[in-house]
Length: 288
Image (cartoon, rainbow, N blue to C red; front, side):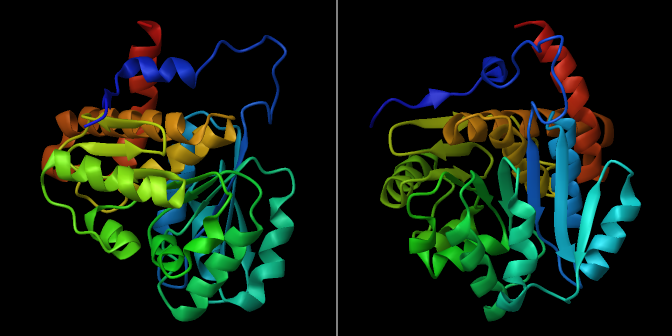
């Protein structure tokens, strides 16, 4: 088996470089998040808040009206644009594409539903994307049926074990060697970066493969995958390459989960994880 890298806190050095005294808004990225539906608003909100805590300058969320209105009430830091619909359909493509101007990266998929119209919308958006993209949650189901839409794109796909099966037709075991082998195979076939989530995360692209051992058994709570997608998006928006962004995001999300788990244990929430991101960065950026 080829060499497998183990991610450490030193990966943060590849993301967080010393800031120039005259730096300004937009120097560290503007992330676009497309997600949500009439039923779900939490997913894009959690991704956005995690991205902001991870250091991106701005996040714009595009969501169906009910979800956008709820998201806008969470925090004044969030920019949420409502689209008049219950869930995204191909008829809303033009409404969404106008927001791509001057955005540096995209996160798509959280809380969008798996209706056929939604999946068609997702693949059409991705086909038109010219910025790096994180494909998560319901968007994985969409591209599984139309893999050609990611051809030639800079893409991170973030499946858990079942989503990986939907994407690839390959069932992965609770066996690290099996996960490494299959993640590498699919990453090579699709020419993208795969972040296969689990007790040990596996990050694979055509040229490299790495594992991440941070995390906690209490991170089974809904939303911790959304925070991971948001952090991935934040790093892409800062100009980090897909493989490094996925490695650093997996490490940071897992370590923030560890910090939160020490405080809350069974009561851990994804929002608790977000609040620990500054503590992780404060500790580990100081010792680099």
